[in-house]
Structure formats: C-alpha cells, structure tokens
Image (cartoon, rainbow, N blue to C red; front, side):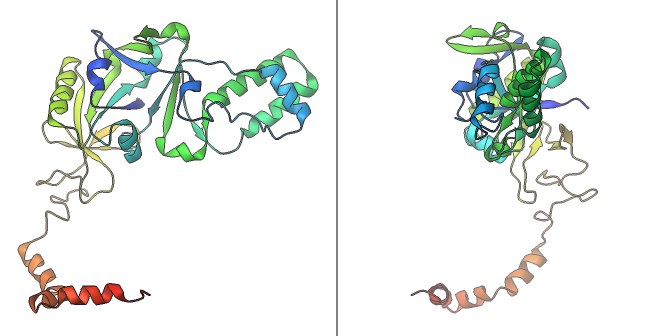
Length: 307
C-alpha cells in the first residue's frame, strides 16, 4: 500500500498552493527559521569531554541548511488540526509519497525520531573517526550527523508524527520571498476539510478537488468514536487505518459515524424512547428537581470539604 503524507494548512492556503496550473506548491524553509529552537541540535553529546567536542567541531563544523518541509503520517492528529489548520478550520492536503519521490531527484524523506538524547549510534561513529582518522570514517561521521540532525527532534514534538522532506536549493523556486517546491498535481490524492471549516472554504476545497481530480473528504468529530472520521460527498464513511484513508466496514445509517462491523446504528442513535424513559426514572436528581430541592442540594453537595 502506498504511503501517504499529510500537510495541515490554513483555510486560505488552497488558492495559493494551486495557483500555478497543473502543480501544487509547498512552502519550504531552512531549519534555522523553524519554530523549534533546537532544530539540528540532537547529534552528539555536547557534554562530552572537550577533546571530543573539539574534534566534532573540526570535522562537522556547521550543519548545512537545506530547504525542508514537514508532513505528518496521520490526518487524525488533533493538535495538528489545532496548530497548523487554524483550529480545525483549514485543510489537509494528502500527497502520494512514491510519486513525490519519483518527481524530485535526490529528495530525502524519512520519519522523525523523537528522543531527548543524542543518537546512540553516532557515539561509536565519532569514536572511530577520532581514533582511526581515516577519511571514510570522517565521511561516515559527517553523513551520520547530518541525517541525525534533520531527522531527530525532542520527544515533546512526538504528537506531530512527522515525516520530513528535505530537498536541494535548486529544487525550490523563490515566490514572493518564500521557497516553494512545485510538484505535479497527480501527486495530490485528496483534500480534507476540517470539522470547523466555514462553508465558503468548503466550496473552495470541493472546487479544487474536482479540478485536480482528487478525493474530497470532510473530517468529522463524532459522539461515539474518539478520533476523527471522514465523509465524502456521497456521505460514505472513511477512517484512517494507520497508512491511508479507507472506507469503513460499517457505519451508522443515521449519523454516518463508523460502527462495529454489521452494527447498523451507533450507540447514540440506537437509544429508544423506552430507554430514555427508564434512564429518566432512575435519575434521582429529577425527583429533587420536581420538588424544587435540586438547587439547594447541589449547593450543599459542592460545599462539602470547603473551608
């Protein structure tokens, strides 16, 4: 199954991303301009003795800056919807990773490793380079450090499930002061609208998906499931299976939420009037309300334990 990449964007980005006919543009930046002040930091243990750090500094010096952009491996990361898609009012652009790789020669795409300590493997590489002094050991160290720098972040960022894309300066184009990589629109497989996307932007999302022949989904927040699910324009239900968005085996006939296999209604929609009456009859607070004693009871209850 082909891996998909997910770019969370604001509601006004689609018109910009698809402004060049037959292409989708993604903004790239140098790591030094990212919001993480520790970008490119986790390579070796800088608290090692000064001889080691001096050798590392001599061989590696400054890690080169390459145009970089960040995707997520998942379209159901709630903090990502909040932080990068304007509190769920924006979109996700789904990208076919294999097609992207085939289009951009030399592109580096890999998962970010989340840890608060340097890469353990680099310790041995550094020691070997320092004590043997062979050119190939030096090159192994330099390449290993560069890879670790670009694909390691502190654990506090792990919720992003980041898969990072790194290209060369020659791959990007300056557009109004921004580094933009344009990829063919056949790399774009879906546009996903957030659960709070406003109607005028929903229209744009549907328009662009039709124009580039990509799927269009609306992310939904349900009452029965604890993660977003997706509806297409035909109200067919989809879920993220860990790799891509796939049609749900079964869904509620009323609200379209995913359900257990062969379950025609979700637990909420299947509540009957009889069950509602039983629940109400078993609620003692209703009896207190009926005799006008509920407010005083709640006040006395909440006062328990107060000083």
